[in-house]
Amino acid sequence: MRTITYGFFFFFILSIMTSCKEKGSKVEPEFKLASPDNLDDNEYQIYSVILNENFEGNELLVEQKTSSLRLIINSNYYETLKAENLNLDTAIFVDFDAKNSSTYYLNNKFETPTKSVTLISEEEKKYFASSQDPNNGWDAFHKKYPKSNGIIQFSRIGFNVDKNQAIVEVSRYYASLGASGHLIYLVRENNSWRIIKTINTWVS
Image (cartoon, rainbow, N blue to C red; front, side, top):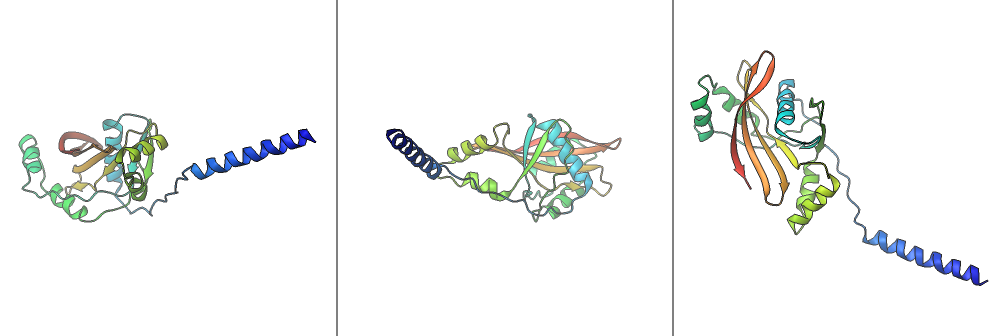
């Protein structure tokens, strides 16, 4: 009888501890990706070049939703690029502004043989940023994605008519006060895209 009593008491305590643990555990919500928009294959080729060459690590996170940024043709960015690249086609700025007047959803069509790329939704990004203490939000992010170097976000890509010059803005977010943006100018030579110039646009 005493053995039965002790056994019952043990399972009773265990059930209480389990219940308390479950109540104290925060259940992470599930996030779904949006249906991707139809983008030119050249854009994914450029995104892939940047992911392969500009970001370290084998596990990369890319926000599915593109950024919305406009570059007026008389901006300092244009003057900087024009000074170093005499063949710069101004049409890339016009095309860039036209495309980035709206946002789009990417597909996971990146060609990164040595890296794993995961798309993250805008909602999940906002979820980690919604914490009252931003540091806690990023701690939770890095706990879920321990091998990630942050969240990468692309703009749409501006091309010239011949599609042998291109410009794109790339941002990376990795901490409450850790983020940066770059404008990247590329040219297509021998059927391959090559990064010519990178300009820092902002830092946090």
